Image (cartoon, rainbow, N blue to C red; front, side, top):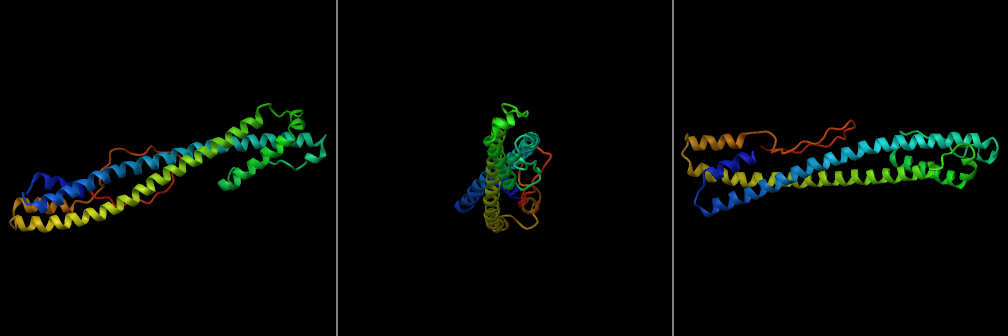
Length: 221
């Protein structure tokens, strides 16, 4: 609705300073809302992409821990104190618990690296696991940044929608006063204020296999 009413107001200008001021304010709101909606789309896309990449890293971490656990079990045959120290873990744990458990495995394996190397632990396995954990943390941070971007933009967007509605109400009063009842202009104005639909979209977020639900905002087109 805001875009249509702005287009109408710009196509039917009025010399009245008050009318001009309201149209200018509405134009600023529309410009800012358009930018915020783009930021919301980009934030959603960034969050989803980071979560998708994090799933891949999580799988790699779980696989690495499984290998280390198998090597530890083999090593415990000659070094009994290693028995049960390192176990495979489910990738379906909550994020914090998963990361904490993986760090415990890394610490234990590092402390017993010599014994594990003799039983088939790769020379770069522990360094690779540490790098995967760093990547996991980085993707988590990226997903949080994307979420903050789109939730913050959405919140401000909703406020702008409300403010734009106030400006449109003012313009409605002015236009009903300057256009004759039953006139083509008044009919076009009423039509513009009654149009429902999306605000304006310049891009769409890249779909990902693991979507994160985000409440949609009120859109006015």
